[in-house]
Structures are given as structure tokens and as C-alpha cells.
Length: 286
Image 1: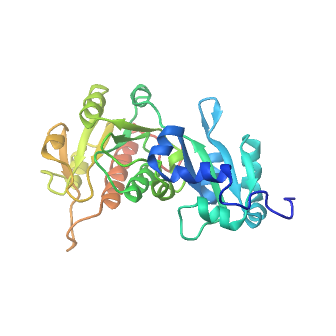
Image 2 (image 1 turned 135 degrees about the horizontal axis):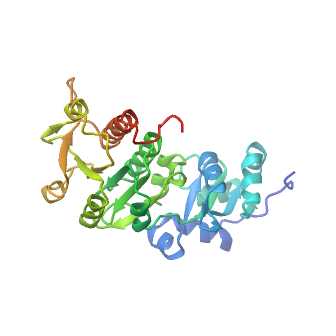
């Protein structure tokens, strides 16, 4: 049972200040730590390890949340995280959400070297090139996880995947699959192609149609999808690097699809084609 009163009651506590500053990218990069908020993210963090070290290093929780999510708090302690019972105002000061859920974890960076991604011979990869919105980045990561992708790669011009909004939008998927960051897009595309991965650019103005590609049976091999900026898509020089530029067909009257929706369609198309050809694990089971 937790004690009757929280141990952290002042927003000026050194522990609280150290956690709160992780809302800023420069401090995240300096400390190589980030925030995971809410029960789903904290649960996934508590069960994840980065190499030989537990990913979750610290947990701040209100008394109410500690009682409601006793299993998560127990998992955090089992993982070796320091658990701090905190006043609601303290959690509100650390949290970056309007309505905090009472749990905020401090986690180690968990990005994977790009070379390790290649060495694993991935069959399905999402490559985010110049994606700037953290919510979109996190949602694409979630889509990639759901579709059974083996990795997500964020180029050096893309948003910080540890941005609190990106972490929330991934809904725990950040902890499920390798994520490589800071890779120049030219290097990423060249290396993936060198590893035998077909690289496709997703673009509404593409000269190839996704339905036609599926009908022709060209989608069953190892594939990396390149998704571009939310506002202007992929520049010509990036499209020119890829093996093909593919558009998602619009059968109705919608002007276009947003980034995350288009990514989900493309990734699931590849996952289905790969399962049909026997070359990729099922997205619904092993």
C-alpha cells in the first residue's frame, strides 16, 4: 500500500525540475532521456530494455494513479525504476498534456543504429523524410507497428521521435520496433536498396498506382516506403532516388489523404502482399 501522503509536493524539487526540462529537445538530447506519459506508454516502457539496461528509469505517480494502476507501478519497480509518489500539481507541472493521467515515466533513449536495422534484413520499413509534425510521426510509427513493419527510420530533417506528442501518438508502439533516427535520406535510400530492399516513394502525384502494383504482384518483396513532409510531400530529388513513386488511388471525391492515413494504406498493402507470397510474418500472428 502507498503511504498516505506523497513524497514530492513541490514543483521546485530537483527531481521534478530535472524531469520537466525533458519537454525540451535540447535537454532530451543532452540527457538522452525522454518522457512517457499515461498508463499505456508507461506499461510498455516498464517491459522494455535497451541493451542490458531497463528503459524506464524513473516513474512519477499520484496516489490515485498508484492505486488504480498498481500493476504498472509494480512492473516499474520490478524493472528497477525509482518510483516517486507525487502531488497532482507536481504531475501537472511535469506533464505536457492538458489532462494528465497521473503517471509520467522518464525513459532512456531507445533508438537503434541504422546499421543494425540493415543487418536484421528487414522486410518492411517506414522511412520518414522531412516529417515535421510530431503527432504524424508518432501515428505513422503506430501504423508501422500494426502492419508488422520491422523498423521505422526518421531522417535527419525529421521531427524528434522523443517529442512528447510523438511518444503519445505512438500509443506505446515506440517501444515495439526498432527506430533509427538522424539518417540522411540519401544515405538511407542507398543503403536500403543495397540491402535488397525495394524503395517506394508515397506521393499523390506518383506515376504508379498502388492498386495496379498489387494487381501486378510487384509488392511481395522487401519494401521500404518513403513518406514526405505533410505540406509539400517529397521533393523531386528524393523521389528520384527511389525505385518507384506510387500514389494511393482516390476512388471518391476526397482531395487527398493525410500523411498517417496514406502511410497506413501503403504499409498494409505491402504487409498483405508479403504474407500472400509467404515472405513476411503475419500481422495478426506468427
